Image (tube, rainbow, N blue to C red; front, side, top):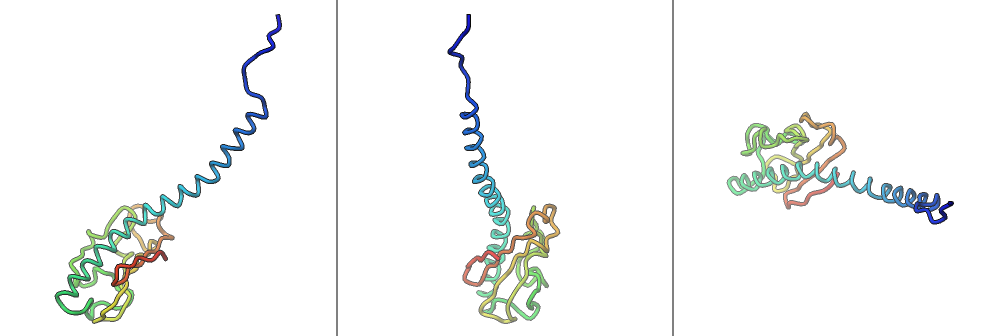
Length: 143
């Protein structure tokens, strides 16, 4: 005997499922990549907060944010002016070389930049395009 009511999917139904999965993948993959970049950049943002805290302590003690050992482009651990060591800034993605000072010596304003392209950390190549900056007000800007 011939069975007429066999279970299964038609080709049209399978094609619709493939199209839906393709659309979902096209939307989800870019969102995932953006989320992983933000997660990696959070390491830099945390270190920038540490540096900002040290700058505020220095300002409270000296009435200025920096001294003459800080010039534009100087690393934030330059001359041990701040109580921030290389180990405080070394992470999985970012290293001490990433964090540089921007401003004038004896300033009342400053900005610190973290440039992932300068990283010598273990996974530094993964953050080469990430740049974050914090200023004296605590405003963080994506570069």
